[in-house]
Amino acid sequence: MAATADHSTTGANAPTYYVSTPIYYVNDRPHLGHAYTTVAGDVLTRWHRQRGEKVWYLTGTDEHGQKIMRTAEANGVSPQEWCDKLVEEAWKPLWQHLEIANDDFIRTTEDRHTARVQEFVQDLFDKGEIYKGGYSGPYCVGCEEFKLPSELLDGATEDEKLCAVHKRPVEWLEEENYFFRLSAYAEKLLEFYAANPDFIQPASARNEVLRFVEQDLKDLSISRSTFNWGVPLPWDEKHVLYVWVDALQNYITAAGYGSDPERFAELWPASVHLVGKDILRFHAVIWPAMLMAAGLPLPKRVVANGWLMVGGEKMSKSNLTGIAPTDLTSHFGVDAYRYYFLRAIPFGTDGSFSWEDFTARYTSELANDFGNLASRVAAMVGKYFGGKLPASVSAGDAEQAIADGLAKAVSIADVKIGEELDFAGGIAAIFDFVKQVNGYLTEQEPWKVAKDESPEGQARLATILYTAAEALRGTAVLLNPVMPSTAEKLWDSLGAAEGLGTLASQTVATTGDWGRLPAGATVTKGEILFPRLEEKPAA
Ligand code: MSP
Image 1 (cartoon, rainbow, N blue to C red):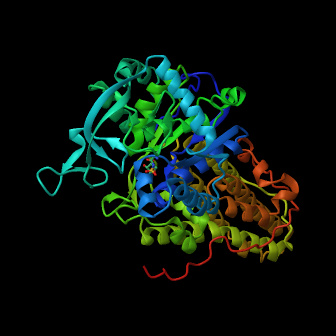
Image 2: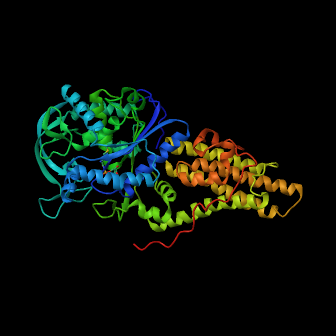
């Protein structure tokens, strides 16, 4: 994925780095697939915060539409009751558990959202962008979307057609609806994509969108009159707004559109909309066209991630393949969870999870390479220097190579994680550095040097242990966005706060500066960062 070099191409230069996740349907509980994007956004925003930038991270829930209404009915409660329950019992607690540091959580049933949505569509109606018409076609309630013939699979009978995503029968809908003049925006959209080649990423996603818009773009049905669980159209209350048109606006209503112009000017346009590849068209075609119609700036980037797969299919609750994140965190811990999915699956491609792969990476990368390094260094500073970090007094080429290695890891990770959203590549660079430090200790053999009681021997020992501890100082900062609790434990164990302040106050820019950890810091063994795994729980 190419980095966006010029952030000013798509509107006013927003001073805040604003990242959004999709807002999730609350018809069911979250699974690994939902958490994947939210963790990625959290790492991205934590990274930018650590750069000292102003950051705003938004997530939330999508609560209108037929899917939610039917689920509530099936459970014998009102849609609102259902949403309240799921949001409070399942969604918000999960994000807290996974240490997601979102700045806001928007629910589409909140007044701050619905009132602004009504103003937005009224404005489009007044401008002649919305008209009344009729539509009939196959509709997938799972996707909450009308389908094109090319997007359907054959079903069990001659008449039955299945949604290619959900593998469930589509319904035939025939209604009088209001329409948004989406077709009028085809040319403008194509011009916009051409002028902003980094708007849609990765390239495969961009190509898919270009092909779609180059074909015959149809106007979009934006209202429903056969059920009422939605935002009423202000000029015709027999209709509720199509759930997607309502949902997309969360990105501006939460940012102060129509309610707090100053905040809105500071936040909008968003820097990155993170989306799953299945909802790319909504974000890269419909949403930009609606914003164009309203005269608002467009988001700077829409980045599509792939799916977590199970048995060759997208993981989903409706296919009964949705695994709850807590099934894994109870075994591996939250930080290892955050690490694993971003490290193991290149962002933008599909990937699958297996206990075996997770266990192997946990043991070799986290426990052996990283956790053991931290505990060995702390133990040696304890044993040979009474827990006071010695000064580096005889640094030579080997130490310079470690200093260079840290600077290199910082600059690679900063571009890969902070700009390119290549989390796997960024984390790999940090772990290459961890490997380098392990190699340094193997070569220098401080446990042997310790036996040499001459002043030169002790100076070597001090230098080696200082170098390793300072390398860990840099590693803690680099891993802080990915594994915040582990990084904090390491920071404490290095006694780094005494001389350097909190981990949160460290910046990416200075992390590569060698020699920041002051000699004399109190190094303690602390708890084991990645304890040996218990037996895998029975399925
Ligand atoms: N409510 C809409 C989004 C509205 S945004 C204005 C929606 N909700 S969803 O809950 O069905 O999906 C939300 C996100 O989760 C999508 O980006 C989707 O791609 C993602 N995932 C759902 N299952 C997934 C996997 N198995 N793997 C990775 N992400 C997947 O669509």
